[in-house]
Image (tube, rainbow, N blue to C red; front, side, top):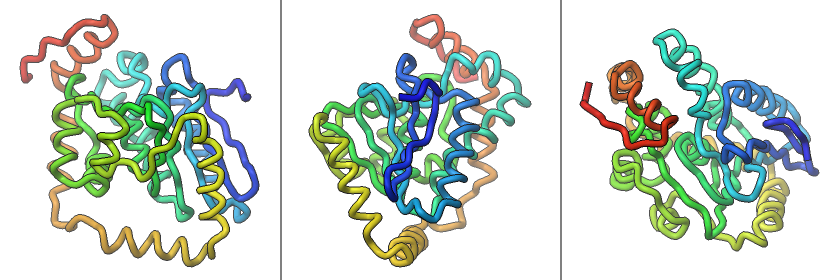
Length: 262
């Protein structure tokens, strides 16, 4: 196993992107986001790779979102927030924009940005002991518009509101009912299942698979008359609010936040 926080592993026609930060439930630091974007570019340009699988190391977590311990230092000013969002969004969008099919292998916690990362993939396979949540509302921030769009496209408006507005945790079975995941698998057989699932995709005609992916995305798009500028403005308002400062401090101090709506 690599000692890097994130690394690539190639097996046949499958490229594995591995998040290796188990002591923090595979929370993604800014440096990890930069490296992930680089690996995704390499996978995209490697014609021998036909399928990309994302997984978390350690057997207890897929990805638990961004590394919140960095927020005070890297995401506490308007300039810092803008730089942080640009870099991290590049990683998530890089997954979404892959021409090759992508699969999220979820074993354990899938939290915050981890849910967006999973929804950015074409398929989501989870073990029965996996847990899902987006606690953004408890931190005083909100999902990026593209993250929200992916969640809505995956589970629909009703479940998207429940996921994003309540901050509740959901079991793997509940996530399956929502349509958040495609398949539920026993923990002991997840690796074998993923290899077989990936090989099935890799053995199909690449042009057919890639064309189907594009066509499905096009016909399934949410209407483009939505106000993206308004959505980004609301996201920035939350990121610059006193509630956001209170939310991240409360997280670091392990206490319940006292939000005031300012």
